[in-house]
Amino acid sequence: MVVNTVEELKRNYTKKELEQVEAARRLYTMMGRPSRDDFFKMLNSGKILNNPITTEDYKRAEVIYGTDLGVVKGKTTRKRPESVQVELS
Image 1 (cartoon, rainbow, N blue to C red):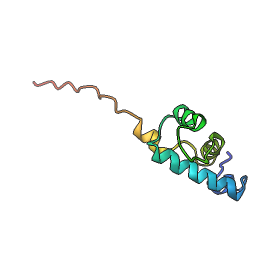
Image 2 (image 1 turned 90 degrees about the vertical axis):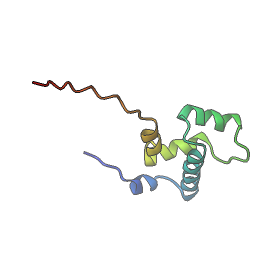
Image 3 (image 1 turned 60 degrees about the horizontal axis):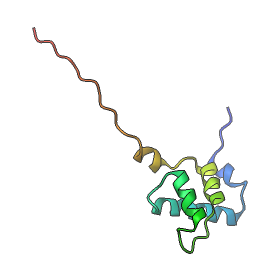
């Protein structure tokens, strides 16, 4: 089984690319963790002023760090448990 650590994955990128990755993660969090498609639309359409971040920067962040944990926890809904039947005798 091959396990890649964050440090090993970071070695594949330059210092400038890593700075852009960190900036992309901060921007994504500040935007309220929108869906990936919505975030890419915002970046590509120019809706965020004075933004040096590109979609490639965020894709690199996903490769290095994986899916943002806030997205996984925040968008997972609780399922209603089944009711328990109690028999009185």
